[in-house]
Length: 549
Image (tube, rainbow, N blue to C red; front, top):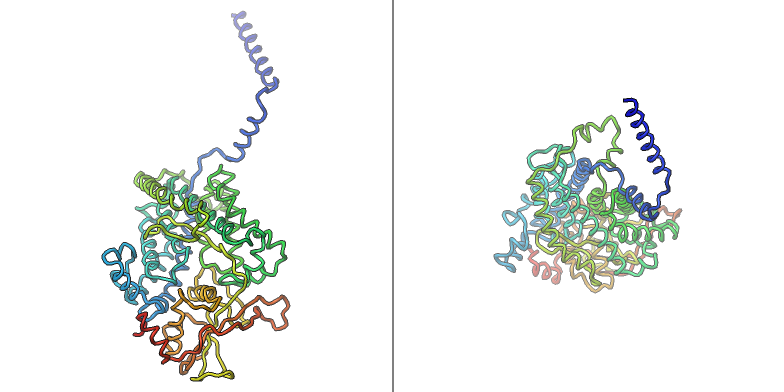
C-alpha cells in the first residue's frame, strides 16, 4: 500500500509539473487570431442573454408622448383645417375620391371616416386618440391599445390631405405596427414578465437603419452643400419652424457648422449599419443616434419627427445596459425581480409573419435607397406598412415668409395702412421671440413655409390652393379659422375689406441688435394682390373647388 501511495504521489507530481510546464510554455498560435478573438469578446460584452423588457418600457412611453402630441394638435386644429368649414374639407375630399375611384375608394383611401365624416366624428376620433395616447404614456401597454391608435392615425392621415402629408405621419404608423409585436395582447402591465420576441426588436433596428440611411443618402444626392460642409451655415435660419435654440446654433462659429455636417454624415450614413453589430457596437451606435436626434430637437421645432425617430434607435440597447441607468432602489419596480419569460407562441408567430411581410415590402424600399433618383418620403401601399424616409435633401438658401395683411380700405392705394395676421410660431413680427413647441405640430405654420418655397418665383401656388381659401375666410370674418391664428388684428370688429399676401425675406438678427429684434426682414413683393370678399375671380376660384357653400 505504501508503494501504491508513493506511486500516486509521484504521478500527481508529474502531472503538476506537466501542467506548469504547459503553462510556462510559449503560445505558438498566430497572434492575429488571438487578438481578433479578444476584440470580438470585448465588442460582444457580457455573455448573459440580452432581454428587452426595459427597452420595451422606454419605447412605449416615448410612443405615448408622440401620440399625445399629434392628437392634442388634432383636437385643436382638425376642424379649422379639414372640417366641414375647414380649409380642405374632408367630406369633399372623400366625395371626390369616391367619384374617381368608385368601389376601390375605401381600399385606396383607408379611413374610418367613410362611415361618418362629420365634424363630430373628426373631433371624436381626435379626442379618443388623445385619451389612448395618454393611457399609453402613463403605462397601459397592450396590443389592442396600439392597434386602436394605429387605426385612428391611419384614419386621420387618410383624410388629412396636405395638412397631414408629412413623412413622420407614415413613420408613426410603421413604428406603431412594429411596437404591437413587443407587447402582450391579453394584459396591460407596463413591465409584463414576458419579454418581447427578438424578431420584433430586430425589425425596430431595421426601421432605424432605413430612417437614418434614407435621410443621409438623400442629402448626399440632393445638395452639394452637404459635400462642402456649408449646409448648416443657413439651415438653422431657413428651416420650417425655428425656435430660440436655432438662433444660437445659427450664430455659432463656422467650424461648429462644419463639424455638425460631419456629425450628420456619421449618424445618418455610417452608424446605421452598426445597429446590427455586436452588443457594445450597438450600444455606441445607439447612444450617438439618440444624441443626434436630441441635437436636432435642441436646434429646431421639427414637429415630433425626432422624438419619433429615437424610438427605433432604442432597440440598439438592452436591459443589461438600461438597468444601470435605473437607481438600485427602483430596479425591482421598473425591471422586476423575476427573470424574463419568453414571449407567447402566438406573438412569436405573428412577429415572424410580419417579418416576412416587411422583408417582401422592403424590396422596393432598398431599391429606392440604391437608386440615384431616390424618393425622399414615399409609401408603397395604402396601409403604409413599409416606407421610405428622408429629410432636407435640399437646403433653402434664403428664408421667404408670406405675411397675410388686411385693410379697412375697399380700394387700397399706396398709402393704405395694412395690419398683419400672425400665426402662432411662424416668423412674422421681427421683434417676437421664436416659440419652442416641439413635439407639438402647428400644421398651418408648416404649410405656410412650403407655400413660400413654392411661390419663391412668384409664379403661383399650385399645391397650396388652400391659402386663397384662408384669404376668403378672413375677408368673411369666418370664426372657424380663429384657432389657427395667434393675432387677428380685426378680432372683435368688422372683418377687413381687403386682404393681400406679401412676401418678405427674413434673416436672424445679429447678437446685440440695438432694437432687440430676433429677425431682420425686407419686403420682396406682393404675391397675392388685394382681394375683396366679392372679387369675381376669388368667388369663381372657390366655386370651382366646391368651397363656395
